[in-house]
Image 1 (cartoon, rainbow, N blue to C red):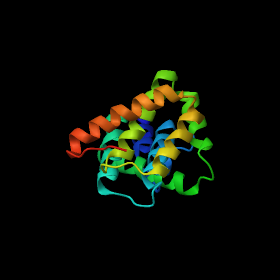
Image 2: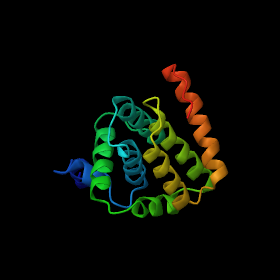
Image 3: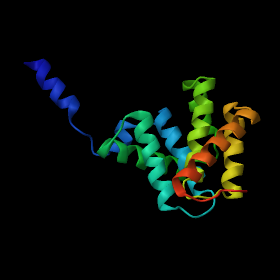
Length: 161
């Protein structure tokens, strides 16, 4: 009986659900913060970028509803408070292998291209994140081309640079 009571108490949500569920060393928060950063790099947050970021986080981490909303909030708050990208890339370096880091760069390209265009500040942000993650230029460019082609299919626009 005491075990059931303890289990019940552990399952109660705390007052700040985003902070309670997602800590500063959580790679999911680092990923969300970097996606926020690239989405906001050009100074304009498009609905398509916002929705694509949420879709990618949901698919990558199997989160929906409140849990997804909490992750998005935690990522946004982390990005707002950060002084550099290293805080996030170092967390991902510790949790992702080389192939997963390349895949993550591909996801970030998808966010950048979600609005049908790529701003030079988004491109620069992706270059810096890839460098910090140890993703080589060749893999970064391959992921960029893949995301660009996929975005062209989804938007129906030619995305020539």
